[in-house]
Amino acid sequence: MAEVTLHGASPGTHAAAPAASHAEGQQHPIKLYLVVWGWLFILSACSYAVDYFHVHGYLRWALILLFMVLKAGLIVAVFMHMAWERLAMMYAILLPPVFVLVFTALMVFESEYTLFSRLTFFGTGH
Amino acid sequence: MAETTLGHHQAQGTAPTGWRSFATDWGSDQRAFKNVSWGKAMMWIFLLSDTFIFGCFLLSYMTARSSTTVPWPNPSEVFALHIGGQNVPLILIAIMTFVLISSSGTMAMAVNYGYRRDRKKTAILMLLTAAFGATFVGMQAFEWTKLIMEGVRPWGNPWGAEQFGACFFMITGFHGTHVTIGVIFLLIIARKVWRGDFETEKRGFFTSRKGHYEIVEITGLYWHFVDLVWVFIFAFFYLW
Image (tube, rainbow over the protein chains, first blue to last red):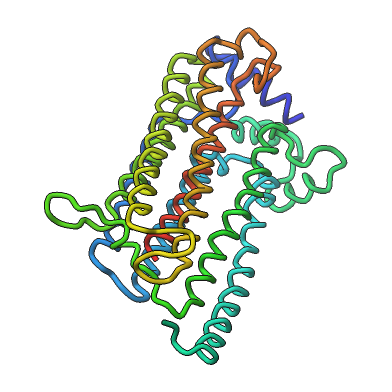
């Protein structure tokens, strides 16, 4: 049913202009893409600035991760049109990668243990 | 747009919203992704699998880096370029980032013009995207050449931890391969758009049978994903 509505373009919405009778898929104002593009530039410049001005410690990490997440969010939501997809689709695609965080936590413990073993049995390396 | 049409349509019936729509979609005995075509759903699922591959690469690198007793080379210095008598940190990577983001911008616009059936603009924007992608790969080739000349190998480098080389070539190499495949994919589809294969419903490799422009969006999904992966590589490999 939804399929029919989308591809056939419901009469009430699209009948106004003849050219729009073919309207389908993701159509958003070009301006929206340009604004997102601009923001991606700004956020990348901010990431670069973090390195350029030698920000260190937790502040560095907080900023890098913040800019990274904002950029990734903009790309997925607007450029990949996830914001306009069905909820069933969003959950199917966005939830699984979240579980990578569990794997990340495992590997943090693993690497700490490996480092501990190396320091204990092999000294401080070269 | 699609959402609006759908919402308007559903307002007249008793279509569920929110969590309930998720439950009914997944619990139905039909297709789970109602208004999403198979082509698009399959590209998303492929990208999900690719996410795990890149995720594993970045995780292995993180594990190698934080478990080594030898100091890790400082990416800020390793990837600096000597410009105008001084070293500018990470400048090449920054330029590569901007090039890739620009390609994402032109791609998003190409998808838009595709759905508007503006063949010329779609094809030109896709070619522009491909050109940005090729530029990116070119700069990566330069970066690889520079590092190989300086003695970086998968088994060692002049500045510290040996795992640096392996991680670098593996992660950027796999990403560069994706970009290269994307450029080829873009060129193929751009040619079909330019020729009007989707108007004449010409049958062929990657040509949609119904004669509509969804393949441009599917190509776009792949391309934006390549850009998306770079966002993570930029953060975890170059800025860490």
